[in-house]
Image 1 (cartoon, rainbow, N blue to C red):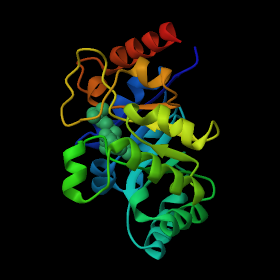
Image 2: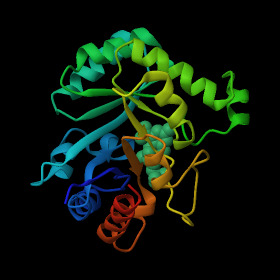
Image 3: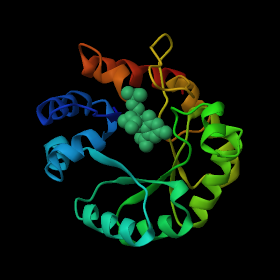
Image 4: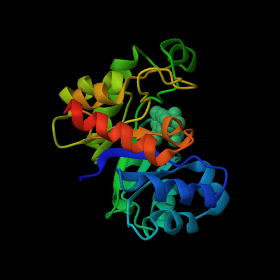
Length: 230
Ligand SMILES: O=C(O)c1cc(=O)[nH]c(=O)n1[C@@H]1O[C@H](COP(=O)(O)O)[C@@H](O)[C@H]1O
């Protein structure tokens, strides 16, 4: 069976747990995601550990955000690990995004628009002109112009972003919660089925899978539900 278009966020406190989760979910999902917690603790070794024997796609979520020269160096440093996807913050601006794209030619650069943990009032407080939909579309357009071929946004904005950037760009949505699951710190959320129906290409799902007593079964259940809905 084709693995579901899900990136499981391996936000684990230790490498053994992350590798175990990766092994349990990889029969069911296309991708696993390594974020700041694991990478800052274990560095590049973590990529080989979670990739394991299956060779699953690894999404490296470092959300780089600095001046272009620094981001170019950082992107070059991790490009040799050959992650399938690397994140940068779209708010770093077009020159920064372009620097990442040029420094990691074999990795898809995904620009994170507006974090899914932010509300409309958070945007106002940090001085971003909202509503979230407009801010996300604005950042999406500038990121694609700068050469990003993937974007991260909440499922709530995915159809507006798709209309803005067209069909060629990979749209990645965290903030995904199966019906009835706790939203935790996520604020702009939707179900996996809705996110996919609205045009997402890859759903980032962490705690609803990794917080389950059986992460493999939880991933399989969401994958099956996506197959039924499509
Ligand atoms: O870039 C990301 O992956 C990301 C962007 C964003 O706006 N929101 C967001 O939650 N994420 C990541 O997606 C994952 C979501 O995890 P759960 O909330 O546990 O499903 C975490 O690893 C976040 O770091």
